[in-house]
Length: 336
Image: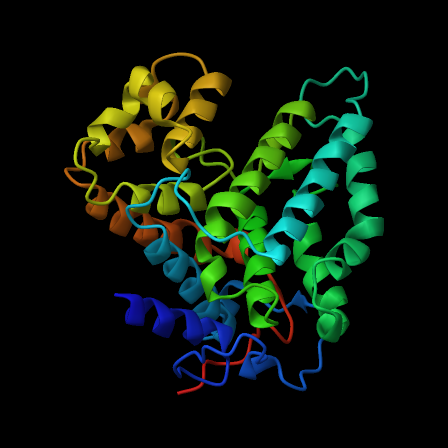
């Protein structure tokens, strides 16, 4: 299984093809040696373009990244022990800065309940500082990648015109992390910290943004969607539960179980947030999740959520039309 994880990881970290990862810590990933970085731009402008996306190196790299992390967190608690590298610490500092800016930018008094305009003030700070924030995370020899990678950071926090947030923004943060792996800032042994430390901290900042500025869900399917804002923590969170000796899918709708275990499991922390934000019977406001609670095993939940993610997020034109492609996540067809 460890070998499979390495193979998967190399698949997206090395755009030249699948080869075993070297153990040499100072070697740059092959796919970035002598790279010419570029500011990412949109490439999917019409529904027929979706085929180009599904055949692209970007799609293969992105799904490889998601599935590698899915495999890496399998059966592990958020509170387990894992390595926290200097880059991970720098990413936590970056997210801490975004959090501090929320405190420094209180919501404005306005008649409309949703979409507080102070979000735009908060976003303008990120817009100005994103490149500098990314530079602080990158190794010195990869600073040329900052303008390209900073685009994904800016895309990951919501839309400043509509003041909304959805799974496309969440995907941009995963791309941001994937790019940091591609340039060698994050490495194979950062896998657990990427999900449990960095992505989890990102989630807490996004929840604070959503609450503080009353952000609208972007492209929400309402009661028929999995969640108003997130998807990836349900995938990785269900993987954490695979082969759990006592907790089954039916248990996550029990509030006592949620309160007792949410600090160990990402999936339950998502349920806790939903319970705090929504009123009424769970089966009514979160029907898809209610249905998932009837699935017999966590491995089936996990496999089903991956299929659902592809179908409902990655294969939907309204989501992918906003996706941006550069040198690190390329629209070029996957190499045979």
